[in-house]
Image 1 (cartoon, rainbow, N blue to C red):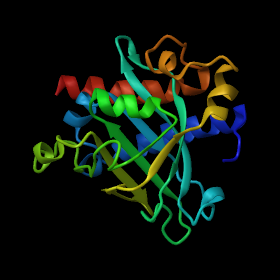
Image 2: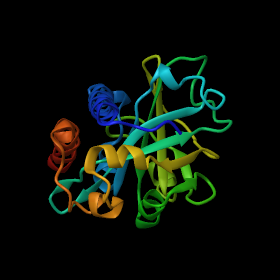
Image 3: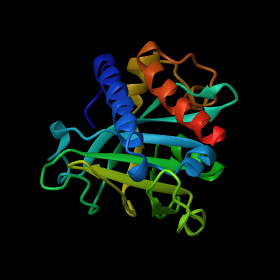
Length: 211
């Protein structure tokens, strides 16, 4: 896996904030507020044509942040190898969003790598800010996943995809002695480049509580 530098990290973080904002600005096609409210963590892998044809056109890099007592954590960096999922469609840029719904899913995120559908159950997430239909059926999945390609946002099953820790990304942002668990536990200050993402996530969760 190609190593990351701080500029890569900053760009990924900014793109992730943009992806989430654009998705949630279309309420009828966004992530249901109830699911956002109950998610332990969220991972966002912005589409990047730079990676469209690496590993058979199924490779992307992004970040994950988890809920803490004081809001969302600083991000850790992740990569996903989509296997036969068809992560990149015809070379187009595809964004992925994943909600980690329970502690076991969070533990998977802390490992070096895990396979969706094998090490943690995964299902296509329901769409629509207030979508209730099908939500109960989805709640037995540990991870709910979505994709956005060419402006279309929809639930997608990432069964078989492998998520890996991007340790070079973590080191570039936080230094050599970074501890991924401490980052997600909120013990590491949110870097300036991630403030917009954390604010964006926090805003929608507060809105969900108010509804």
